[in-house]
Amino acid sequence: MKKRFYLFALCMAALNLRPIITSAAVLLGTIQSQLGMNALTASLLTTLPVLCMGIFSPVATVISHRIGLERTVFFSLILITLATVLRGSDSSVLMLLVTALAGGIGISLAGPMLSSFIKKYFPERPDIVSVYSISMTVGAALASGFTIPIYTRSGHNLPFALSCWAIPGLLALMAWLALVRRKHHPSNATTRQRLPIANKKAIQLTVFFGLMASMFYSITAWISPIARSFGYSPASSAMFLTIFTMIQIPIAWIVPHVVKRSGKPKLLLVLCSLSELIGVGMLLLQFPMLPAVLFLGIGAGGLFPLALMLPISETRTAEEAGTWSAMSQMGGYVMGACGPLLMGWIYDQSGSFTSSIFAMLLIVMAMIAVQVWMTVGSKEAEGRGRR
Image 1 (cartoon, one colour):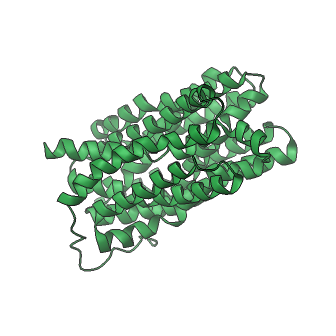
Image 2: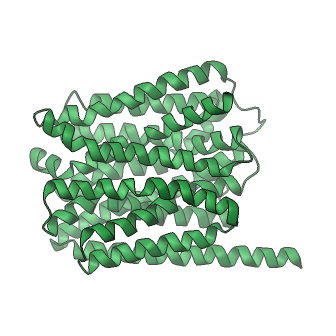
Image 3: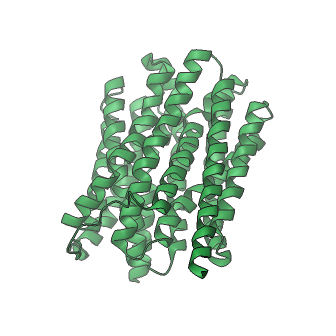
């Protein structure tokens, strides 16, 4: 019964880590037109949370050491939910940016701690990361799929459409309140774990995470505007973001289990990246959007759980898993935050998404190069071990 409750708590927390981003992303064009934002400023609605997720990730390990893992996650959920609620009070540019900042801080605290949570309560089951990844993807899909219908049926009420996603946050807080009451002790470690900044594997994971996040958030922010520029209707353009998100759900479930059985995470990393490469190539050649979005979703759906799984499988304790996750997410999300911002800047300069899509192509190619580096490094380490 306890294990089921821990899974439920993990699911509810992860469900709230993306709606504050994707609900704004799917209405990006509307927000721009209503509030007079240019593309660069609009990019900040997705860039700020991602940047915070990088900058503040190491803070999660400090807070967790002092007040405990469970209370840290509970506090992060309070921040995310409060930021989402505040979007209902005012739809000004300033309020949207402030809540994006606050929500990003909350997400940054929860991310590494949920990896630590899996290591703590499911030490022999790193594939449980699939529950984490799927729940996060479902939350993103719900927000991207239902925000526009809610906006339309509420009489084009932008604050309501953005703030209604606080409801899942309130439900998550109730679940974690019970967990906090039962598990309130801080870490038993005598010294706080430091970030593994000198560890080659941790550095490789951080660079990979950054390139992966750059692609993911660039697609999330700009796939709908790209579709509009190709001549698709606003409703169809928004639906492509939903499809991109939804296809990730079964892939995020399958990939960790395949890794558990095959023991070949690096091979799956490269295959998922090749899927993204095909999708970006289709966009560049202006193929129909649907197959391109499917390839992009398959790639992203596999890469993200692998990025979450590797720090868990490479470490021995919950504290160590938390620091590896904090480092990969710190550097990774800082790099990832540059993705949507770069795409918006390139579009503002060129007036076309062709150059932005070409930049995505370069990012995917760099990511594949890093994955090859990781694979070669692992083989060299195995060879030295045999000698």
